Amino acid sequence: MAWVSLFSGGKDSAWALHRALDDGLSVARLVTVHPDEDSFLYHVPATELAGLAAESIGIELLEVESSGHEGTDSSARGDAELEPLERALRELDADIDGGLTGVVAGAIESEFQTSRIEAMCERLDIDLFAPLWQRDPRALADAMLAAGFEIRVIAVAAAGLDESWLGRTLDAEAFDELEGLNDDYGVHLLGEGGGFETLVTDGPQMERPLKLEYETEWDGVRGRLRITDAWLGDS
Image 1: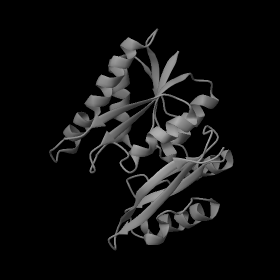
Image 2 (image 1 turned 120 degrees about the vertical axis):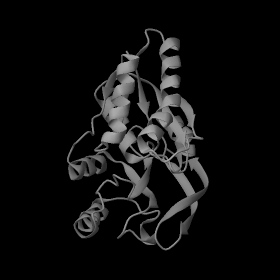
Image 3 (image 1 turned 90 degrees about the horizontal axis):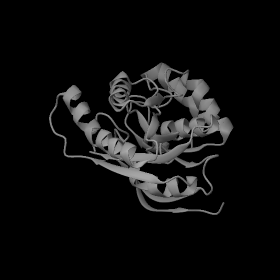
Image 4 (image 1 turned 45 degrees about the horizontal axis):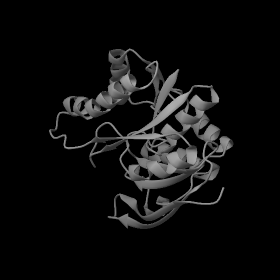
């Protein structure tokens, strides 16, 4: 009963993995897709740190390159971005004894993303486990904090989110502020639509925390962390 968990290192994929493990799913691989900077389908920032996170979690990582996709049609672009992942999972299905059982995904509200992953799973004849799908955002945020997740903001690109959010750890107070920004500016509490991106630096499935050194890049409207060093700290 081998599952794979799509894993960017961000809070949504990390929480989906946590839920899968907590529900007793046998996760044989984490799968990280490294996309183009302007990906229509995937989480982009800091996917190069997934290897360190996977080492801390103790599950083998499969890395997939999905780059070089051009064109402005979002539907065609999304389909093209998915193809390398589907090929990699098809090969993994053939290599694992008994084949793959299913895919774990951290989708919350994106029909664009979820419909493509669902269709991919149908073509591969495997199941999809999406424990965050259409759940209440604040309930998800509170559950992540209660479980002991340490969530760092690594990119912002929405009105109301200024440079002070870069590098900030999301706690209950931060989520309260984000609820206010949702009322004022429409910022999604969990960053759906690319308002902000995150990196989980510690959590219940990690043996050792992820430590960072970084600089901030801010253009007056949007910004991100430029991570200069990363390592696993003491357990």
